[in-house]
Image: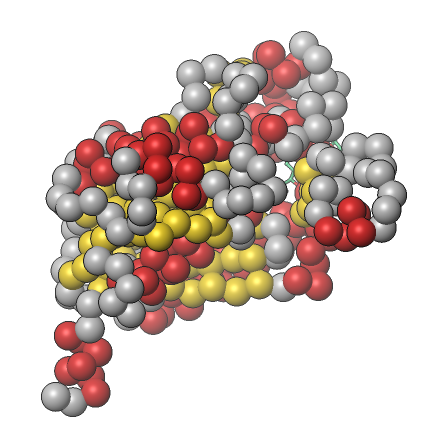
Length: 341
Ligand code: ACO
């Protein structure tokens, strides 16, 4: 067999199920205006967000992940996955990883399970990791979950971030299949720039602060973001990564039927779609209802769009994400015939 023949015959990860979950509690802009120096008009016009979901006290990331993961398994049917990859910025605790507990609670005890930490790009990184497990023959079915209880690390008094973030989770099931099937995970482009790690960070709680022997400074346990600078990088990186993934798939902008970008900010989404020449009506968005849900953003968006019919079998889908790290990514695939749960 030729090298290209071997590549074509190698197992490829194919999406065969999708599910999502958001907590019941809804926080509207009006709720935030009651306790923060902000306005509904500012939040809507600067971010495109009207409301977001928030975990109630005592609810953790694993609880969201178990719900979303369980729904993806129902959507997929088929044999139980032998690996679980969980992308999260807000693990239940610093050690151990949250994925093994999630696997056990979903009934996948014994499966390989690990966390991926890539902040808002977590889903695309986990998708790449899960696809790699299948391509290498290490796993035949992989549950990829992306979940964040982001509001647990947001400073409720910081109007620059408290208005943006919400909680939620999404998950896909990958099976071993062929490269030319709908749902086959196509080109994935990933990148990072750690020189800019200070733009988006939680300063305290890690080995740097602990080994200093000093307690955390005021507010250092909270998530901080230098929003204005981050905005520019988000547009540049998501545009460049999307272009690269589309080129690798052999697509021109006009070939993209649906564009699913990390729901960071409505203005960022419009700027990236315009930069790529993708018509606004092809860009999926749920930011108005859920805000920025961190790692869970893309699969939550896909599950909702698939359930509502705006994402359908055969659509050429381009996805992109950007976030803390800095880390970014993009991926292209043809959406399969799956029923979203
Ligand atoms: N209500 C009213 N005024 C506000 C609020 C608010 N909620 N938040 C900030 N302001 C004020 C600021 O204090 C500032 O006032 P000043 O001019 O008197 O100093 C003014 O509004 C403008 O502030 P900017 O930060 O320049 O506002 P901007 O238009 O950039 O919007 C935002 C801020 C929404 C954070 C935006 O910068 C953004 O979305 N950045 C990128 C986010 C992103 O992509 N993050 C990466 C992914 S998320 C992740 O990785 C976890």
